[in-house]
Amino acid sequence: MSLDYNRPKRVRLVDIAEKVGVSRRAVSAVLLGTGGNRVGVGDQKAKEIRRVAKSMGYQPNLAARQLVGKRSHTFGLLVASAGDPLRSFLIQHLDEEAVAHGNRTLIGNTVIAPDRFEKTVQLFTNSGVDGVLCAVHNWLPGDRAALLQQHPCTVFYEDPGIPGAAFVTADRVSAARQATAYLLSQGRRRIGLALTAKSRPSAKERLQGYKRALRDQDEQFRSDLLYYASPKYKDPFAWHNAESLKWSFPEDVIDDLIEKLVVGQSADAIIAHDDYWAATLIKLLHRRGVRVPDDVAVVGYLNHYLADFTDPPLTTIDLSHLAAAAEMVSLLEKMISGEELSPDQLQVRIEPKLIVRQSA
Image 1 (cartoon, rainbow, N blue to C red):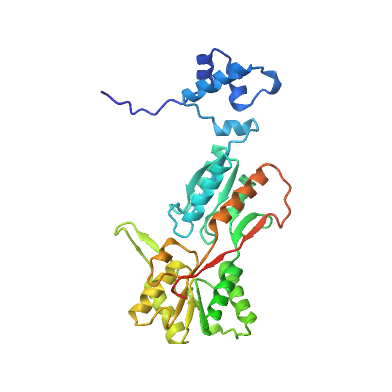
Image 2: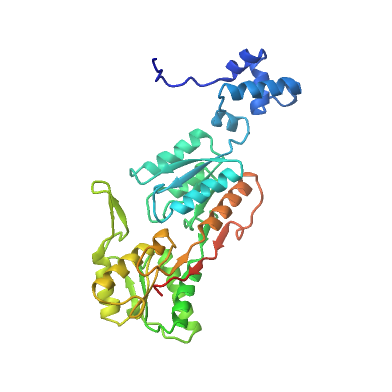
């Protein structure tokens, strides 16, 4: 038995027409909705055309549908990486939500090459997508303005900093406020806040929430309980080594954090930048003989599944990615349908939730 490894032949409208014994225009009218009232096809013949098209494995040309003003029911989904541990659940929920609305997604990973963002945007254009969902981190490269020019129907996860752009984001002020207020309620008074870079909007918003919680309880804000990894350390994130097949985190960042906040300022609690920071912090505190949470309580940010497997399990902030995905797809559908939306409707903030475990 020999196998044919040649690329399968694309089923054309004319192929279906020949099979059914009708004109190509008739097939196009049934499957693509072209021709308006100028092409008449009876109900029985239309059913036969659809049956034959399905049996032949026909897939509509998305760009062709767009040219005749029809929806392709396809969304472009821009991500840094589909395996990004900080966004993987959001990506999963976006795809599921799109399917629930009768659409499918074309996922484009953008971190592979410097110009991959722009090339993927062009691919989406060539593929005739109805709109784009962009979940690429704001601090990663990519021309967002050019994306909006090619695809005005685009919804971002997090504010891209472009006036009038539609976006959905976690309320980071509320996230930090909840974490700080909880630690204060547990009797912690020297609460450290650890972040990546002072200049990033996400850090500014979390600092705002942190200060607000302190003010609510008449606690004094102390700048010496803040820790920023930048500029001393660049991109302090968990990363996967393709050669060793291991995940790692720059422990020198956390050692520096411990020296400044725990040793230097006697912090009795630390709110970490994310769950990977927090997990590494717990590990290195244990290594120094510091008990968690007895001596220092630790709170993360993300509610990644690793939070249940740290020792002790990690108290953290859940960013409600499921709700964010639902809002992003709903907003994109409204934009595609031409619904008039106010500036407030184009900016959606999702309330995060504190998940209490044993680390705090």
